[in-house]
Length: 337
Image 1 (tube, helix red, strand yellow):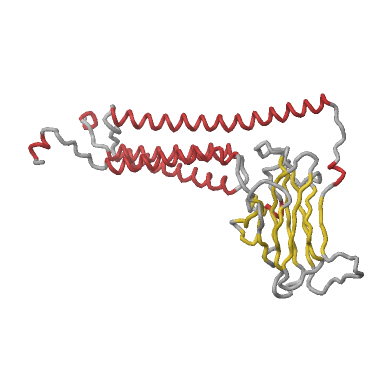
Image 2 (cartoon, rainbow, N blue to C red):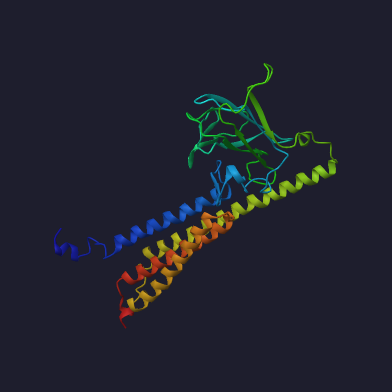
């Protein structure tokens, strides 16, 4: 097509910077949507995490469940544990949980990488620490193996945490967990005195009396049930409220960009003498919010706080994009007066 045809308006060539702006717009929208879908994930994290803030879950437990402290109402047991290990010997361990009302849950165990833990059915290695294993499905009675070290490394310590959940799909006070610390002695340090003594043992932690719950007043039980329903409604209502707010915010940004590009002639021109200081201010704000968001994600803050700061961060980044877009826009007649 020659210059004469193009001059008649048969072909609309993209203005300078238009492809770059389109790509930036797509990246911005993808980032907004990614954070939007992270809202329920932040509110309901899945799987056994390796860390809880700066602490290891297998050593200090998890604040997501129960009241954030160990509960003696959960009896965590492990059977098949030898008193002292034999070099390169493989032992079969079974972990079980007992609770008055919560029949299933999850677990995590670690031997500080002194031996080799091999997961069985219903369990898997922890991605952040392949030497530890935990459940990959809610259940009970997990069977797995432990292979003793090939040389005498002394006493082998173990950390075991078990979590009995109430099955409502939330991480609340209805869940309860407990921690069991135990060890296996070095080879030759124990002896079996008599044929009747078992070579392996079962180790437990928790209050067995708490498994037998006495009858309670029906009125009190109903009041507690209603309180749990109200708490659940409040928690889930927060998730849907914040998710809906994010959807409306993202939709407003998309709608504004669409109408401005299609009917408003694109972004209004902003002189570089104004765009540069504005871009610096908005860029500094974006960087500060990004650092704050990273800090919140790395520490034990509520997902609502993380989501709010994350959305503010993206909003500030969108402001930087708008400044760049306006600085690159072609000046109109009114801008030259």
